[in-house]
Image (cartoon, rainbow, N blue to C red):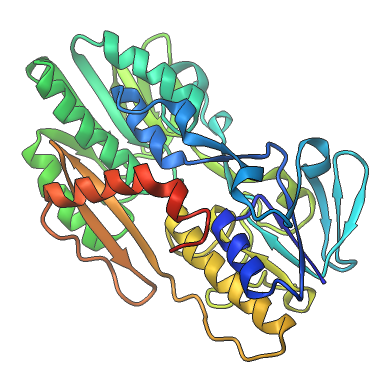
Length: 377
């Protein structure tokens, strides 16, 4: 029995290999063949992380007898659930018994006029390095940070960047000569109300001016003005926004997603809606689930899918469903952080920022390669 995945969570592929070693053959399709620890990009603009150390060869992370196809052979361009087949850029057709879609999301700066020329971000290696240079040369003025539109990857990251930026400017003696404005598309500075209630007083305490209901419509790079759909204009000297996000083109081309490429996914089983009999699953950023588009969500979802497939091929009851579990840290600057733990039924209750949470996040960043890809946690 073959189980095929497109750029799947590595740790859970290895878990499935262990759970159903004698019942499955596993093939991973990954055009780049590289595993990137994207949370590390947050630290690059502050000179705290070498982005080249955030990548590993996917081949080195997978168990030896898991097949990996990369390049054109691993670039899936079309998926046909009815025939249980997928096509790759090299013209080959591959049959599967189970298919897990972990195609993720993509930056879509083209959705906002002027974004590519007028805004910076840290949602790619190239962008985070460019932002590092701009911050190093910044000597004061007005910085606008925030989120262009929802949904977007790693919801805490823009807030984390803002808190870390404020602390960095203070350490450099530039806080007094710098205004910081934070923009967000809905009526609060974070999607989840309990977290918003927690961060709003911190933003006020740090002197960050918050602009809600600010859906970025256009950016004027020449005059350095960012404008919202709601009619608000903000001048800036440096603009750092999480870019618009969309699902992958292969999902759109295969008719599996909505107009933005997000895959309709069952909240508990993680089966793709409308294809329940086609053994088609989705995890991570690619889904339309009402949880964070984050590595943590993908990690817990991957566990459930691995267990489901192993149970089915071994003809035993399924022991686990997904209940929306997410766990992540939120940096608050000055060497402190808080922790968010929640699911569909239980909103997060962030504890008071502490040095301990910051150190635990630093430890995860350091030991990620030894813990998550091998499937140890």
